[in-house]
Figure 1: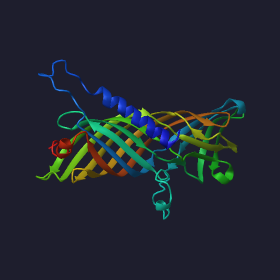
Figure 2 (figure 1 turned 90 degrees about the horizontal axis):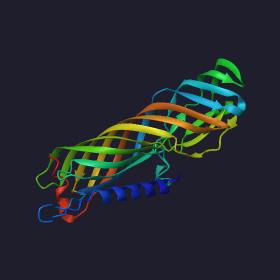
Figure 3 (figure 1 turned 120 degrees about the vertical axis):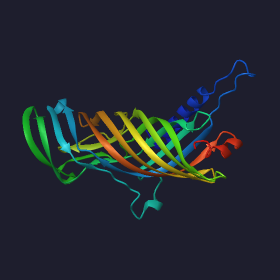
Length: 285
């Protein structure tokens, strides 16, 4: 699944949600039509640290059913090198948020939250292999490196997609509402859409994107809004992901791991009407 397709699906989902949030009052004299109060969008880049995890591999054709025990993995930032401005925006580890506030105070919202995170089992480490290889029981170790016929990449994305509930708390706002500082909390659940590429004991898989399980996350963010329109947001996030049926040569793999993530994003408030543009920074006091 390409980035373009992911964005298209996200926009379509938001359109459906936006449409369903409008309530039509039967008596317009006593009931007001409910409207989405403000929409926002942000784009940024991230950095991750992963917990150790065990990868279980099943390859019936080879007689394999084993674990790579407690492997160490790293991210692949892509934004921290000299060529960052010479490559597509979607090459480094990026993230976007598309959301809206649905109550009058504009402090409760819904958000589509996508993180293009990269997960690579670290090269040049000794990993315990426990289970069956070629139908024989083993408990040994291998030197995990590309030169030795091993790699395991979710390098075009471990790809966390979350549908979040959002709570905003106002910390400060100027009298003219041209500067506002908010603390935001987010919690959600959704699918993972990894790009799976690996070589185990010299056998390569058919790499590609797939739906690979689910994840759940908690995020806190400090948002500074200037001139009502633009904001800079610094976030920290913890995520727990369970991957299953990941493609390996003649079989599948599964694992689960935790992630700690730091994110810096630039965003824009897009209220549904002009007068709401003036209100968006002032309501969550």
